[in-house]
Image (cartoon, rainbow, N blue to C red):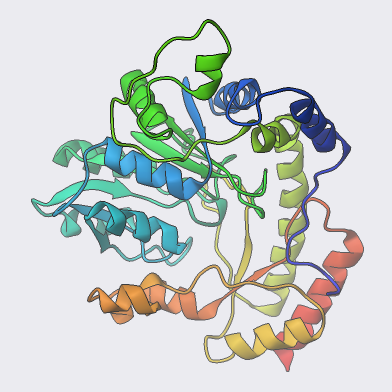
Length: 373
């Protein structure tokens, strides 16, 4: 591969953190997880941050902790990763898809109200590519209909729109530290919420429903624990949490580096007359993915040509109703025409702080050649 699709920036500081954890006795959730939670909570200006082993776990716990289950409906977007919909199905509820904005790929807030029924319990907006949804509009709709908001902010740790940050208006916000995310520990996630009692319940549900973690049980005089709820094994261990800690002070610096790269990409796209997701006025884009929208009839051939030239590429994403399982639940991609068209046109190109000028030049030259062929 000439230019990798993603290359992490982990190094000596992260190795040093792992050595510290290995030098201690607590490998599971403990003091390092607590420190990472506090630092990330400070970054997001939220009081309740809970590290988990994936964003999928966070989304699932948000749903079940808010009482969403069999027979309920959750409004969300068809332009997202499968986890957004799968966690809804896993609770026994049903996703109700709403089409997306043509400029951003985000759920179209103007179309949400028409999708609300007496079964609707929540709205799950996805801040796609790092661009926040219109949370002020979505909050007004939710308040009018007494609905919860669960934000899928897997792409959007650094995002902001109209002065609002992820988690500020939602009942819960869910983040990802997966291998290709802006900060990463390989696999990991986090949930934030504004309600302390809800946070305590979610933390308990993340560890079998037990009222004391192993760290709390064995770090001091032994006290018997109890199982309060039937929960899951979703907690994040010290090993992975420790890797996050040295990355947090560099979040803003790395965003600036990605912003510079994206600006050069978008200048090239403009010269070629190729579409791409727009960053709307009043928005701070987290710049998680550099996506471009090409001719749908040529997308797959362009993907192939890029790979033949050694460029790492991805598709983020085909619309969910194109996928076999979702289709089998009775959804049709054509019912969400904007998302369907974006899903047929999209290509994601390499984007990460370690992308060099040479890497970018190589990628753009290959892209220009592939588009013109």
